[in-house]
Image (tube, rainbow, N blue to C red; front, side, top):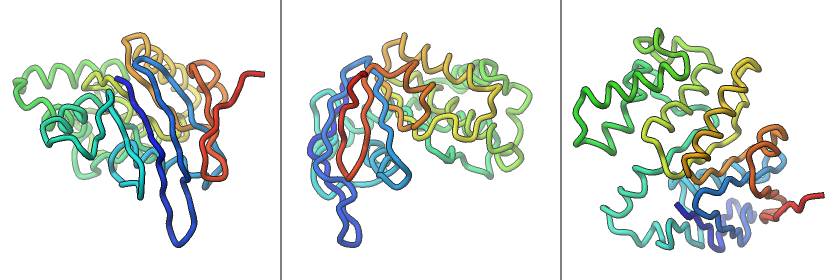
Length: 223
């Protein structure tokens, strides 16, 4: 999936937080977007995910403006988008299994319950979560919920994966698993956009590296 940000502007309280931000991420490409705290990374992530609207500009998927899409077209895009939020955004009153099931129920209603359960249990096994499927999210550690957020994003086998601050709450022992999952998604052809300052993630996975600074996005050239 090709994803494009075209001339994105966003202001708040009279301040320009994003000023003419543009980038094209080609199908199957992995890019990183880094920047200091408060530079607008999470803001840009939210605009990409559609949870926040830019003041001006367009978010494009395969050449189509998301705002101009008909409901059916937008739904087709959303079913192929996996988003991992900085604080997981899991529903604390549901079990882990129910949380992992949510995107399948929302975007793939035609699948049988058995097929969806098999997919959920398969990805839970990949993450070592099989014995925790009945746990409510409020019983899990912060690191576990971060991993569960990634598992939920991958359960639909997305064509585009967007992740805000990977590994921020994940223990060191889980780093290799997370990197392996990202490599697998990339090898499968997913377009990946990572919002992070983690050099190990950026240097190992990103085809291009961008820096968000002074409200603008700049390509970081290799030394």
